[in-house]
Length: 104
Length: 144
Image (cartoon, rainbow over the protein chains, first blue to last red):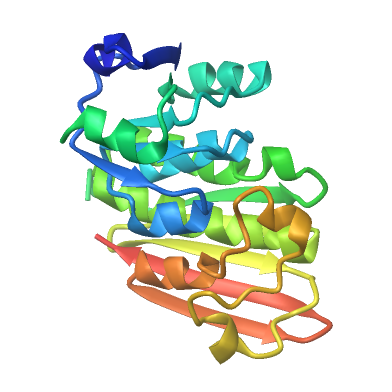
């Protein structure tokens, strides 16, 4: 996590658990689809920024949320993510390039 | 399981149907409780996702309801009870992609028609008892 958020093109948004290992990547914006298909420890790339993404990431046990295309969440989302131990980083790149840059 | 339990542990929650932004609170609390009990992460993940999907359904369709989670030596049972509109065609509702969720819910990334299928996917047992106009009770079990 810490390594990824320090990489070029990525920016930490909320990193309460920087030691978390990333073991895969899942891309998707439909939350139930993500819960059905993403694996624990995946980096989850999405453009959704509403508060529910924090609960989905927490319950599906993904390593982090990666907000693609430079989208930014509300302050309340960042606050909740920090409180719930959910990592969020942002990427200026589209989802595909973001996944390539993570490169797992 | 963790330690031998003399009595099953029961967690009860009222699911608030008015506030979609806080939907999932019961599931998040259950996750926390199960973690404290030392239950393995994959079991917690399955229970959490199944319960969250059910909780979201109760908020979207039934103005909330009640949730009970019973942890015994053999399994974790989740019982979700609401007094909402009921499910007219359960077979149809179980199909991936079928949804009756309104547009405002879809714009949040829900309503993809994956809720009930996910609940089945992540549990070892699932039963839906529903009466149109009276409500729905869903019982799910994840075995240890």
